[in-house]
Amino acid sequence: MSQTNWEADKMLDVYIHDYFVKRKLHASAKAFQQEGKVSTDPVAIDAPGGFLFEWWSVFWDIFIARTNEKHSDAAASYIECPPCCILQLSLQSSSIFYNLEVNLGHLK
Image (cartoon, rainbow, N blue to C red; front, side):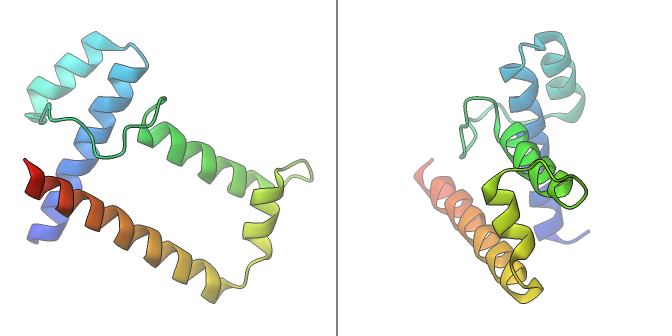
């Protein structure tokens, strides 16, 4: 496994732990942290419900917009966007997230 994938795995673990804590699933958070040797450092994106919950909410809104007439205006805009535009936005957000993690890592 490459170093990039390893770091991605570690970051996912940190955000899963953060999700457990924010959902007040403290026993699960503790077990996951101990078994996975997950860092207890603060997350870079500290959303009130947890980054994973925020991400899931956006994903679900867009996913459901493709199959259901009742969806948000933001989701409608996204599904009407050409595929090349979606790829560009995805790459930009990935780059922003990576740069945020790298910059915060240097502050430690």
